[in-house]
Length: 283
Image (cartoon, rainbow, N blue to C red; front, side):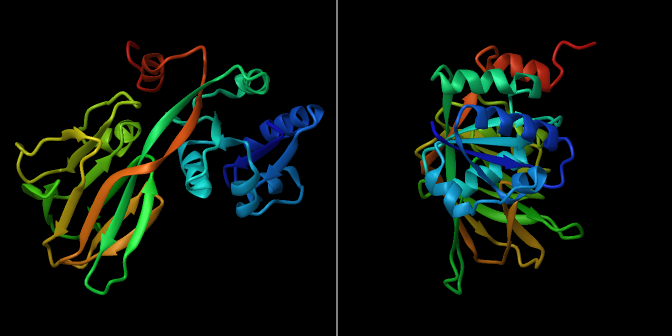
């Protein structure tokens, strides 16, 4: 690995000393370092374009939290580039590497001694009456939700063209196993091992208590049809990109042909991560 990109959380003071340490380490290893605009600002150096990072990087180092890592995954799109997430102090299910482990982890990576997991992504497409179709891929989830003062949303859900139910709720979360510990978990969804081949459907505050989360095979195609006439219905992709929805709009969701490659700490496993992040066993 000679071309290594450094991406930092915007407006983060805690990123500066870590970025400087990593930059110095990589320079000493004679690596070509690509900096996104935020990392360049932190280091007071020239930046590289998103296209340069996408096309030339062999490794991406993300300094920040899960949101920063998700932005990096969206930036590289379909490129098969391993990503190392270094956590700067927030919850961080995806940015698993701690700051004090960063240099040793990079030493291991450069020695080709590291563990990488493929994480499934979802492909979402909005079909509306104006033929103004929109497509986006996500690592965590696609969420249909209402505005602050809007009424309950009514939507029909189909799986592989089979009618499932008419959902009446504050919203609906379609999540990957990786996203099972994000919004879906807060809405009462199950924790799913991140490398499992499945898709989660989790209602948000359903009108009926019998409307429970379900897990379906990853080769399923989900179609959601908006039935409500309320003007305050939205769809959000990984909590970062949002669009307005209207009555009659259709949302098609399926497993993407692309995936994310996350570098995982070798000294921890998924269950130790859950214990740490969710405070299991703490009194």
